[in-house]
Length: 264
Length: 294
Ligand SMILES: Nc1ncnc2c1ncn2[C@@H]1O[C@H](COP(=O)(O)OP(=O)(O)OP(=O)(O)O)[C@@H](O)[C@H]1O
Ligand SMILES: [Mg+2]
Image (cartoon, rainbow over all chains, first blue to last red; front, side):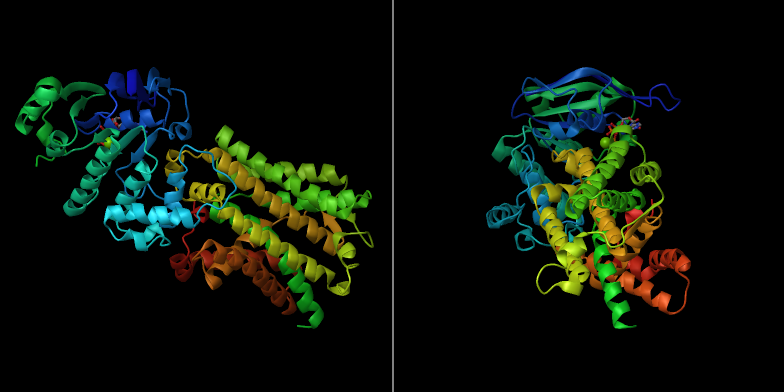
């Protein structure tokens, strides 16, 4: 499904701020894989997701989705395959526009936008039904501006937008980190639900080791721009949080507990 | 204020309001501080005047003038998106280049259109119109363009354009080519501005190479006045607001002139209006003005 081959990304190459964020990283995802990504701050997790999404070009290596090479495609062309939710609730929606306008932008992801009325009765009905599934009461607020929503509501809306057009690949970058625990749980619930319903191939970055092992079917750990651990099936089922911390220290040498890791 | 001054101000307000629609599109919708406006306003006037002077059909001349504005806006957009020049500098570059272009187009600093055939003399031939020609044609034009702009902003492309001004990263991740959106928006914006310039030249019966100076600030003042007085709750309301703002701005200018201020002081007055608006806490609270503060 997704194939990342030996990609390398160095920021500010040739300056004193040079920073190697990804070094010769490879990753293969099968269709329907739900992979959680962990690693310390600056390990390159976000850079990996952003490289796949095309926020910037990689320096070396190739990226394929369903066998099609996307390495050189600009971000807006890759969007046809990819749904995204960011850490910052502000990033995924247009605040000055209404809920329905935001949704219609997502509804046209991957298709040509035309000079026809963006929102008609038909779209409105569809949006209402989809918003109902979130269970946040947003179905009655289609024409409210998104700036009126709470962070959690915005994140749920962004998740709906990312999955409205069944993406081939869902990229989640700590998408619940900025929410209070209760809202975070709700958004995570919605995430599991939609990933299951649509059998989405998903990459989810998290700092919560419990989520990392509890959600999805595979966990990778990153350190200094590399994947240092790839847990699947049996090995993953038997893994515990202390075990994970130990493996991290063995492989990376650093102490993960000093980091932003959340244990429970 | 005499009836004559009153109707003259209203006429001007209506035709300048078309320029204000353009400024609204770049500054507010796209959140792009585009200074090409000063040049493209003159470009519209210069093109229309030159063509009319040469005997062209004035309607055709107005159309071609607007196309010139479209091209100027596209040029600014290309400088910004393809060559990564900042919005401000891209606009200033276009504006500066247009000064020479406008002189080339006209071949001299000004062109008189006294007693020439214009869109307004043509329209005056329509039954019942007569001496209301300028007023009616300007009113019809700004209304039609305002409605078209509103309808456009509600289309799929229009929604993508607005999102480009609101959250570029987000709309790109929804598959929109934001570079294309900016070029499109700046083109339409400067097309409207040039259209307005061509009307103003035909109404005052001359074009002058310096007539666009300070136009951007007049446009900003109008947008702010309209948005503060009428509001921005919806796109439709905002379009009405900026048109009204353009008309109200002309009345303020007219009153200031009646009070005895020299016409040469007008730019200072306009700048003061904008400065007052930008530093006033009430305005700051009501309007979110990122493009004005970059
Ligand atoms: N746009 C950028 N310009 C320069 N350096 C960058 C940029 N983005 C990331 N980096 C650097 O690349 C490295 C990897 O960053 P990245 O954001 O991928 O880490 P991360 O694993 O997501 O960390 P966190 O858990 O803190 O989100 C860091 O050292 C970071 O400072
Ligand atoms: Mg990160």
